[in-house]
Image (cartoon, rainbow, N blue to C red; front, side, top):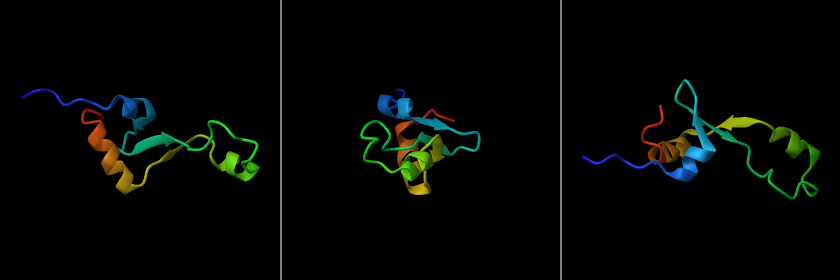
Length: 66
C-alpha cells in the first residue's frame, strides 16, 4: 500500500498540540492593518485552536500528524 501524501500547504499552516487539537495563527493580519481596528489587531495576536468541524477537515490533509 503506498503512503498517503500530506498537503504541503497544511503542514506549513497548522501544528498539532499534545492533546491532538489543531493550532493555527490568527487570520487577517497580513496586510491592510490601517483599516483594522486596534481591538481586532490585539485580539488576533498569537495563535488559536480550530473548532471541531474545521479540525476534521485539516486532519484529513495531514494523515501522519500526531
